[in-house]
Amino acid sequence: MFPWRGPERDEVLRLRQTLSANVAFVSVEKRAGVVGFLTLEQGKAYVPHVFVDPDWRLCGVGSGLLQVARGFVGQPLRLDVDIQNESAIEAYTALGWREQAKVGRGRHDQVRLIGP
Image 1 (cartoon, rainbow, N blue to C red):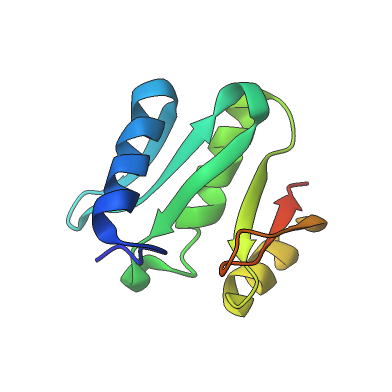
Image 2 (cartoon, one colour):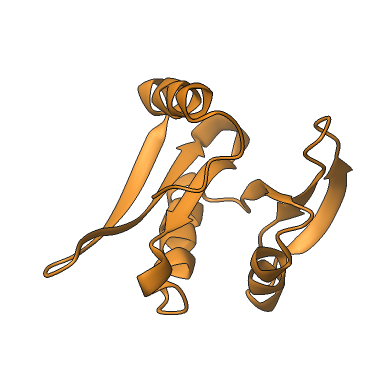
């Protein structure tokens, strides 16, 4: 179950568009299957999607995906997080990410973070 921000149909289309023109990294655990993924717009070093299965959070899956993506582009990554998603912001901050800007998206205010 992916926590879509908007209507599922629109979000799946957006994910498919992202995948068709960009890179994806997938974390697989032998017995559990896919436990996380990340999409990356290489030229912008921007991460449009990052997801870790709830059962695998706090196990290093997300930080591992971000490290691989950063190594792939060779520069700090950027991503947007919903302002109300305080746990995600705290997790990124603990990993050394910092706020770059507020990003208004109508009813979905976000904060743009830049990685270490």
